[in-house]
Amino acid sequence: MLPEDATPEMQEKARDVLQGVMEKVSRVLNERAQEGASLDFDLDDPDLPLRPDDNILMRRDSRCIIMDAFELARTFPEVEIDPRLVFDNPTIEQLSQAIVDLPKTERTKSVESASTAQPGVTLSSVPFTQLTVGDVAACAYNPVGVSRYSRSTDGMESILIPAGRARIGDDSSCPSARENEGPSHEVELSTFLMDIEPVSLGAYARFLNSAKPNQDQLFDWCLLPAEDARCCHLPLTLGEDGWQAKPGIPPNWPMILVSWYGANAYALWAHGEDWRNYKSAASANFLPTEAQWEYAARDPTVSLGR
Image (tube, rainbow, N blue to C red):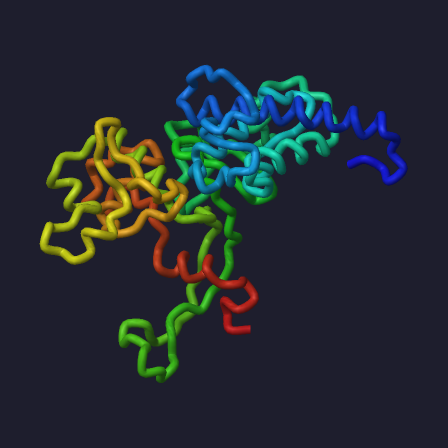
Protein backbone atom coordinates (compact mmCIF):
# COMPACT_ATOMS: atom_id res chain seq x y z
CA MET A 1 0.00 0.00 0.00
CA LEU A 2 1.19 3.53 -0.74
CA PRO A 3 1.93 5.94 2.12
CA GLU A 4 -0.48 8.83 2.60
CA ASP A 5 2.12 11.34 1.43
CA ALA A 6 2.86 9.48 -1.82
CA THR A 7 3.76 11.79 -4.68
CA PRO A 8 1.88 11.76 -7.99
CA GLU A 9 4.88 10.02 -9.56
CA MET A 10 4.75 7.28 -6.90
CA GLN A 11 1.01 6.87 -7.42
CA GLU A 12 1.42 6.58 -11.18
CA LYS A 13 4.19 4.00 -10.79
CA ALA A 14 2.02 2.00 -8.40
CA ARG A 15 -0.85 2.03 -10.89
CA ASP A 16 1.48 0.78 -13.64
CA VAL A 17 2.75 -2.03 -11.39
CA LEU A 18 -0.80 -3.06 -10.48
CA GLN A 19 -1.86 -2.97 -14.14
CA GLY A 20 1.04 -5.24 -15.09
CA VAL A 21 0.18 -7.70 -12.31
CA MET A 22 -3.50 -7.67 -13.27
CA GLU A 23 -2.62 -8.53 -16.86
CA LYS A 24 -0.51 -11.50 -15.74
CA VAL A 25 -3.12 -12.72 -13.25
CA SER A 26 -5.91 -12.36 -15.77
CA ARG A 27 -3.96 -14.20 -18.45
CA VAL A 28 -3.21 -17.11 -16.10
CA LEU A 29 -6.81 -17.47 -14.93
CA ASN A 30 -8.41 -16.96 -18.32
CA GLU A 31 -6.10 -19.33 -20.17
CA ARG A 32 -6.83 -21.99 -17.54
CA ALA A 33 -10.56 -21.27 -17.86
CA GLN A 34 -10.18 -21.90 -21.60
CA GLU A 35 -8.33 -25.18 -20.98
CA GLY A 36 -4.93 -23.74 -21.87
CA ALA A 37 -5.98 -22.02 -25.09
CA SER A 38 -3.95 -18.91 -25.93
CA LEU A 39 -6.10 -15.80 -25.84
CA ASP A 40 -5.83 -12.51 -27.71
CA PHE A 41 -5.51 -10.73 -24.41
CA ASP A 42 -7.14 -7.45 -23.41
CA LEU A 43 -8.32 -6.68 -19.86
CA ASP A 44 -11.25 -4.73 -21.30
CA ASP A 45 -12.37 -7.49 -23.66
CA PRO A 46 -16.05 -8.22 -22.80
CA ASP A 47 -15.63 -11.80 -24.07
CA LEU A 48 -13.00 -12.80 -21.49
CA PRO A 49 -14.24 -15.81 -19.50
CA LEU A 50 -13.21 -14.02 -16.29
CA ARG A 51 -13.45 -10.23 -16.17
CA PRO A 52 -11.39 -8.26 -13.59
CA ASP A 53 -14.38 -7.82 -11.23
CA ASP A 54 -15.90 -11.33 -11.67
CA ASN A 55 -16.07 -13.57 -8.62
CA ILE A 56 -13.59 -16.37 -9.36
CA LEU A 57 -15.18 -18.64 -6.75
CA MET A 58 -18.48 -18.67 -8.63
CA ARG A 59 -16.76 -19.95 -11.78
CA ARG A 60 -14.11 -22.35 -10.46
CA ASP A 61 -14.30 -25.20 -7.97
CA SER A 62 -11.74 -25.92 -5.25
CA ARG A 63 -9.48 -28.17 -7.32
CA CYS A 64 -9.29 -25.60 -10.13
CA ILE A 65 -8.62 -22.75 -7.70
CA ILE A 66 -5.76 -24.65 -6.07
CA MET A 67 -4.23 -25.37 -9.49
CA ASP A 68 -4.70 -21.68 -10.35
CA ALA A 69 -2.72 -20.81 -7.22
CA PHE A 70 0.13 -23.13 -8.24
CA GLU A 71 0.24 -21.53 -11.68
CA LEU A 72 0.23 -18.04 -10.14
CA ALA A 73 3.11 -19.09 -7.88
CA ARG A 74 5.12 -20.01 -10.97
CA THR A 75 4.20 -16.71 -12.60
CA PHE A 76 5.21 -14.66 -9.53
CA PRO A 77 8.24 -16.51 -8.07
CA GLU A 78 9.28 -13.47 -6.01
CA VAL A 79 6.36 -13.84 -3.58
CA GLU A 80 4.78 -16.70 -1.63
CA ILE A 81 1.35 -17.61 -3.01
CA ASP A 82 -0.86 -20.32 -1.52
CA PRO A 83 -4.44 -21.31 -2.41
CA ARG A 84 -5.89 -19.29 0.49
CA LEU A 85 -4.87 -16.09 -1.31
CA VAL A 86 -7.33 -16.85 -4.12
CA PHE A 87 -10.11 -17.81 -1.70
CA ASP A 88 -9.58 -14.61 0.32
CA ASN A 89 -9.37 -12.33 -2.75
CA PRO A 90 -12.04 -13.66 -5.12
CA THR A 91 -11.70 -11.21 -8.04
CA ILE A 92 -8.77 -10.60 -10.38
CA GLU A 93 -8.60 -6.99 -9.16
CA GLN A 94 -8.46 -7.99 -5.48
CA LEU A 95 -6.06 -10.86 -6.12
CA SER A 96 -3.71 -8.62 -8.11
CA GLN A 97 -3.62 -6.01 -5.35
CA ALA A 98 -2.96 -8.75 -2.77
CA ILE A 99 -0.01 -10.02 -4.84
CA VAL A 100 1.39 -6.48 -5.12
CA ASP A 101 1.13 -6.12 -1.32
CA LEU A 102 2.83 -9.44 -0.54
CA PRO A 103 6.35 -9.15 0.90
CA LYS A 104 9.07 -10.15 -1.53
CA THR A 105 11.05 -13.27 -0.66
CA GLU A 106 13.97 -15.25 -2.03
CA ARG A 107 12.79 -18.54 -3.49
CA THR A 108 15.28 -21.14 -4.64
CA LYS A 109 13.00 -24.18 -4.70
CA SER A 110 10.34 -25.01 -7.23
CA VAL A 111 6.73 -24.51 -6.25
CA GLU A 112 6.19 -28.26 -6.17
CA SER A 113 9.14 -29.05 -3.89
CA ALA A 114 8.44 -26.12 -1.57
CA SER A 115 4.81 -27.12 -1.17
CA THR A 116 5.68 -30.61 0.02
CA ALA A 117 8.58 -29.74 2.32
CA GLN A 118 7.99 -30.72 5.93
CA PRO A 119 11.04 -32.15 7.70
CA GLY A 120 10.53 -35.57 9.23
CA VAL A 121 6.95 -36.10 8.06
CA THR A 122 5.64 -37.66 4.87
CA LEU A 123 1.86 -37.89 4.51
CA SER A 124 0.75 -40.61 2.17
CA SER A 125 -2.40 -42.47 1.12
CA VAL A 126 -4.16 -40.72 3.98
CA PRO A 127 -7.86 -41.43 4.57
CA PHE A 128 -10.28 -38.69 5.53
CA THR A 129 -10.33 -40.23 8.98
CA GLN A 130 -6.72 -41.17 9.68
CA LEU A 131 -3.28 -39.60 9.63
CA THR A 132 -0.55 -42.05 8.64
CA VAL A 133 3.18 -41.77 8.08
CA GLY A 134 4.95 -43.65 5.32
CA ASP A 135 6.15 -43.56 1.73
CA VAL A 136 4.45 -41.40 -0.89
CA ALA A 137 1.76 -43.43 -2.63
CA ALA A 138 -1.05 -42.68 -5.09
CA CYS A 139 -2.51 -40.02 -2.82
CA ALA A 140 -0.35 -37.54 -0.91
CA TYR A 141 -1.31 -34.78 1.48
CA ASN A 142 0.81 -31.66 1.07
CA PRO A 143 1.06 -29.05 3.86
CA VAL A 144 -0.63 -25.73 2.98
CA GLY A 145 -0.58 -24.14 6.43
CA VAL A 146 -0.71 -24.89 10.11
CA SER A 147 -2.67 -28.15 10.57
CA ARG A 148 -3.95 -27.90 6.99
CA TYR A 149 -3.21 -30.22 4.08
CA SER A 150 -4.10 -30.37 0.40
CA ARG A 151 -4.92 -33.79 -1.05
CA SER A 152 -2.97 -34.26 -4.27
CA THR A 153 -5.59 -36.25 -6.20
CA ASP A 154 -8.58 -33.90 -6.06
CA GLY A 155 -7.15 -30.74 -4.47
CA MET A 156 -9.41 -30.98 -1.43
CA GLU A 157 -8.15 -29.11 1.62
CA SER A 158 -8.28 -30.95 4.94
CA ILE A 159 -7.68 -29.94 8.52
CA LEU A 160 -6.00 -31.97 11.23
CA ILE A 161 -8.41 -32.79 14.07
CA PRO A 162 -6.48 -33.53 17.28
CA ALA A 163 -7.06 -36.67 19.29
CA GLY A 164 -9.45 -36.39 22.22
CA ARG A 165 -12.49 -37.64 24.06
CA ALA A 166 -15.95 -36.66 22.90
CA ARG A 167 -19.46 -37.23 24.15
CA ILE A 168 -21.76 -38.10 21.28
CA GLY A 169 -25.44 -38.90 21.11
CA ASP A 170 -28.45 -37.23 22.67
CA ASP A 171 -30.10 -37.79 26.06
CA SER A 172 -32.74 -35.10 25.61
CA SER A 173 -36.45 -35.85 25.65
CA CYS A 174 -37.04 -33.57 22.69
CA PRO A 175 -39.92 -34.92 20.57
CA SER A 176 -37.80 -34.60 17.42
CA ALA A 177 -34.97 -36.73 18.86
CA ARG A 178 -34.60 -40.19 17.36
CA GLU A 179 -34.43 -43.32 19.48
CA ASN A 180 -31.12 -44.33 17.93
CA GLU A 181 -29.48 -41.02 18.95
CA GLY A 182 -29.26 -42.05 22.60
CA PRO A 183 -28.03 -42.70 25.10
CA SER A 184 -25.12 -40.28 24.90
CA HIS A 185 -21.75 -41.85 25.54
CA GLU A 186 -18.10 -40.93 25.61
CA VAL A 187 -15.68 -42.09 22.90
CA GLU A 188 -11.91 -41.87 22.51
CA LEU A 189 -10.77 -40.58 19.11
CA SER A 190 -7.29 -40.61 17.64
CA THR A 191 -5.99 -37.84 15.38
CA PHE A 192 -7.66 -37.70 11.97
CA LEU A 193 -8.06 -35.51 8.89
CA MET A 194 -11.41 -34.01 7.89
CA ASP A 195 -12.17 -32.12 4.67
CA ILE A 196 -13.07 -28.51 5.39
CA GLU A 197 -15.72 -28.23 2.67
CA PRO A 198 -18.16 -30.54 0.86
CA VAL A 199 -17.19 -32.29 -2.37
CA SER A 200 -18.13 -29.87 -5.13
CA LEU A 201 -20.10 -30.50 -8.31
CA GLY A 202 -16.95 -29.97 -10.35
CA ALA A 203 -14.97 -32.45 -8.26
CA TYR A 204 -17.67 -35.12 -8.48
CA ALA A 205 -18.00 -34.53 -12.23
CA ARG A 206 -14.24 -35.06 -12.63
CA PHE A 207 -14.58 -38.30 -10.69
CA LEU A 208 -17.40 -39.51 -12.97
CA ASN A 209 -15.45 -38.54 -16.09
CA SER A 210 -12.38 -40.37 -14.78
CA ALA A 211 -14.17 -43.52 -13.55
CA LYS A 212 -16.62 -43.77 -16.48
CA PRO A 213 -19.16 -45.83 -14.48
CA ASN A 214 -21.84 -47.87 -16.22
CA GLN A 215 -25.56 -47.23 -15.87
CA ASP A 216 -26.05 -49.61 -12.95
CA GLN A 217 -23.19 -48.00 -11.03
CA LEU A 218 -24.56 -44.51 -11.71
CA PHE A 219 -27.93 -45.53 -10.28
CA ASP A 220 -26.10 -46.91 -7.25
CA TRP A 221 -24.35 -43.56 -6.79
CA CYS A 222 -26.40 -40.55 -7.83
CA LEU A 223 -28.98 -41.15 -10.56
CA LEU A 224 -32.67 -41.53 -9.72
CA PRO A 225 -35.54 -43.33 -11.48
CA ALA A 226 -37.49 -41.11 -13.85
CA GLU A 227 -40.57 -41.29 -11.61
CA ASP A 228 -38.63 -39.91 -8.60
CA ALA A 229 -39.70 -36.29 -7.99
CA ARG A 230 -36.14 -35.38 -6.93
CA CYS A 231 -34.79 -35.91 -10.44
CA CYS A 232 -35.19 -32.22 -11.22
CA HIS A 233 -32.70 -31.40 -8.46
CA LEU A 234 -29.82 -33.48 -9.85
CA PRO A 235 -27.17 -30.76 -10.45
CA LEU A 236 -25.04 -32.63 -13.03
CA THR A 237 -25.72 -33.38 -16.66
CA LEU A 238 -24.00 -35.60 -19.22
CA GLY A 239 -23.01 -33.80 -22.41
CA GLU A 240 -20.62 -34.29 -25.32
CA ASP A 241 -17.69 -33.28 -23.11
CA GLY A 242 -18.70 -35.58 -20.26
CA TRP A 243 -20.30 -34.86 -16.91
CA GLN A 244 -20.53 -31.24 -15.84
CA ALA A 245 -22.63 -28.87 -13.74
CA LYS A 246 -25.93 -27.93 -15.34
CA PRO A 247 -25.99 -24.50 -17.03
CA GLY A 248 -26.29 -21.70 -14.50
CA ILE A 249 -25.14 -23.82 -11.54
CA PRO A 250 -21.67 -22.87 -10.18
CA PRO A 251 -19.28 -25.86 -10.18
CA ASN A 252 -18.14 -25.02 -6.63
CA TRP A 253 -21.59 -25.76 -5.17
CA PRO A 254 -21.76 -28.92 -3.02
CA MET A 255 -22.72 -32.17 -4.74
CA ILE A 256 -26.09 -33.50 -3.57
CA LEU A 257 -28.25 -36.63 -4.00
CA VAL A 258 -25.29 -38.97 -3.53
CA SER A 259 -25.79 -42.35 -1.84
CA TRP A 260 -23.35 -43.96 0.60
CA TYR A 261 -22.16 -46.06 -2.34
CA GLY A 262 -21.50 -42.89 -4.35
CA ALA A 263 -19.66 -41.24 -1.47
CA ASN A 264 -17.56 -44.34 -0.85
CA ALA A 265 -16.68 -44.68 -4.54
CA TYR A 266 -15.51 -41.06 -4.64
CA ALA A 267 -13.48 -41.45 -1.43
CA LEU A 268 -11.74 -44.57 -2.78
CA TRP A 269 -10.95 -42.81 -6.06
CA ALA A 270 -9.65 -39.70 -4.26
CA HIS A 271 -7.22 -41.86 -2.30
CA GLY A 272 -5.87 -43.82 -5.25
CA GLU A 273 -7.81 -46.97 -4.40
CA ASP A 274 -10.01 -49.10 -6.66
CA TRP A 275 -13.40 -47.37 -6.67
CA ARG A 276 -15.02 -50.58 -7.96
CA ASN A 277 -14.99 -51.80 -4.36
CA TYR A 278 -17.54 -49.13 -3.46
CA LYS A 279 -20.07 -51.62 -2.06
CA SER A 280 -17.68 -52.86 0.61
CA ALA A 281 -16.60 -51.12 3.80
CA ALA A 282 -14.17 -53.88 4.69
CA SER A 283 -11.17 -53.12 2.47
CA ALA A 284 -10.38 -49.41 2.81
CA ASN A 285 -12.90 -47.11 4.43
CA PHE A 286 -12.07 -43.44 3.88
CA LEU A 287 -15.36 -41.96 5.07
CA PRO A 288 -15.58 -40.46 8.58
CA THR A 289 -17.30 -42.42 11.29
CA GLU A 290 -20.38 -40.98 12.97
CA ALA A 291 -18.32 -40.15 16.07
CA GLN A 292 -15.61 -38.41 14.03
CA TRP A 293 -18.19 -36.42 12.08
CA GLU A 294 -20.01 -35.28 15.21
CA TYR A 295 -16.74 -34.44 16.98
CA ALA A 296 -15.35 -32.46 14.02
CA ALA A 297 -18.58 -30.51 13.64
CA ARG A 298 -18.43 -29.23 17.24
CA ASP A 299 -16.22 -26.78 19.05
CA PRO A 300 -13.72 -28.92 21.05
CA THR A 301 -14.75 -27.14 24.28
CA VAL A 302 -18.30 -28.49 23.99
CA SER A 303 -17.45 -32.03 22.89
CA LEU A 304 -17.61 -33.22 26.49
CA GLY A 305 -20.49 -30.98 27.42
CA ARG A 306 -18.29 -28.33 29.08
